[in-house]
Length: 499
Ligand code: ZN
Image (tube, rainbow, N blue to C red; front, top):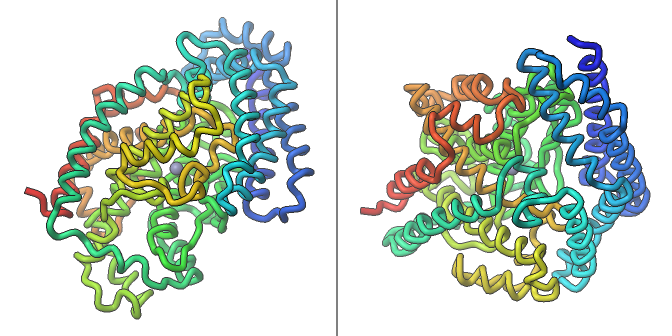
């Protein structure tokens, strides 16, 4: 190891530690902090964001990078230097003042968004949205881009992704989804999903969720679960301190149950990163799309599979004997796989989910380019909902105010959710070839083979491969919609008894 690389590695790790402190403050804000703490927390987060930015872009780091670059190291060093250079280059273009302003504004905007959503009053959030769009446009201009500002922002979440490619992928996905949604809507014998909206005690749900997390091998020695308004997974120390949250709805079992499986999927990825590379790119997730592929795989391909419920339904039935005692396994399995147009993205079924993403992707690009004025967002949202999903939200709380992302200034984040679904299907198709008896293993409550496969093929590599490279390396093909389309067609043709 060269002297320069050794020093660079130490800077990288300190930066990782600083990011972890920021993550802890953010976790606390969402899980524990009283409302009165928001101003002080905004100042703390802004201070840390400014500090991290200064460290990231210091002359010393620049100097070390240019010295370490000529180093012919092994792949860990090559990966770390490549990614550190990428971070340095991107961050150096953004003035520290702007970084601090964005951190401060987003902490306050999240608070304003919560109020606006609770009161379903878009006007209370609109000025913040305008401000954040303006700040993020400035950021994109500083970073630079080839064709559109959106690319510069999306690159933070999905390195290398381009709007034009995502647009083409989403178009073919939408074209493939619409006929399936139509066929399902016309199926004569739909599942009875009302069994899921009976009364389920939140505290019992919480106990059950912990059991599910343990079942799927989430390690509580290196993680914990809590309750928050919006479920999320955050990492305080990679591989060793991974935190999940869920929310439990009294009259909707899937929110807590599948929400937990989803966050567990994220958590397993974070717990699977190698300790020896902690706080460096080699010990970090590839991209948000790849991260989401892990959560969606455990939530849907495992958690909503017939094999999983063959094993687990008896236990859930015993946990809620009054509500599920007389419900047959087949009816429960079909109910948790109900496909129907819905208002809320996080509760959408596997088939219509991506349409919610396409809608947000289109709106964000229009907002960022200025083609869509902030005041017109609710109307535009409702029109797209009607055109794409076939229903119109009765209020903005269940429409354009439902998601936290815009209040976080996270424009360009949404596409990673649909990309995650596509990655998940392509990975799962390959895992099903590599693990010959995968459904039988799942039905036998043995999740180790799939987790082992993910650890070996994805988790252990950190950022060694970019998302596109990783997909090709594992499956032999570039990312495509085909595995997802095949998976949904096969699964839902059975669930809905389609010809
Ligand atoms: Zn997720």
